[in-house]
Image (tube, one colour):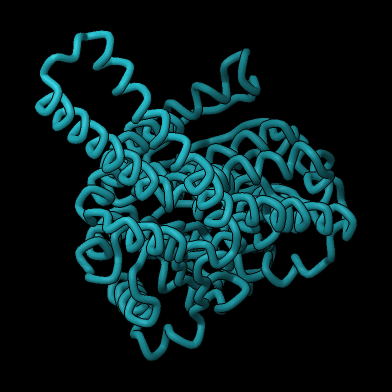
Length: 451
């Protein structure tokens, strides 16, 4: 395993850099394609959220891998490499596994313990699978990260410490008032119809708003979300959809606006916000969860407007969550990292062991055939008994070494045992490689159905 992650997040970079480095869906796909075309990488996928961009790859050379992945992130983000480099972090092998497992548990989130990151990890894996850039290592890694995250939420009280970014943002808008009290009877406008916007709409509905308007570039998606919200089995709130051109009119009627789109430019300018509040007597609350931002930061200065965005959320998230729960999750992460590393090291030697047993079987078959040529008078029963005896001898001779080498290979520093086995028994490298390819194809078929 030579897992490498190069990335930046709210912990390493200011919002202004994260905003400029944000990747569209098409850009992520191109980034992965170019990553696989790069010489050091054999697998890759990208985890991109509103406050992190991380490129994961299986590389055969550390320094070349870091240089190539950093360059690719700079090229596709549009931020120059010299400007981007000071904000990049690098994790390798077990440290990279530890990082992803921590991310999956919400330990590295802006709001510690939030669970939405699990859906984003799932999306990152699905993207790598769809583009055939995620192989056995990344499939195993991301599947295990999802399980670790779920374990942390089910076995600890990390949920008490963390919330979704939506809930946290609404709490910042409401300030010292309970969200349910603050939201009751308000009219809400949600701009966007993706996963974050859907979560925002559902959270607003549960909080007691009287009406929700969904605006989206694709009207059909907005209509579908509005339908789900309005259904008796859903939230039952009054909801309807509008096209993006109607946002200006809806802005004058809304009390609270949540925006999270994939737009590369501003959705609401400072002038549009100022125009919307000219004749109103009640405040306008704006929550911008997009990266890059949807709402002009100048809206902060408009009288009667309260704007909370990713930058202000980062400042407000400094309050420490429950230390005992966080410590418990950290323990889970450490245990899972050790288990994952041992499993990967053990799996690394399996093709060599299979190749050794294949070679032994070929030797048995060859020697039995030679014996039959020298003793043509053997009957079927005698040939079968001799063949079975030779096979038992070979199996007994190989049993203890192969079991022990798997145990040793699962320990730190055990990767060299596979090389030693190949050298001692003069195994054909192509035979070992063919077993690895077969395992990889089987794993790909299996994992694509597990996301």
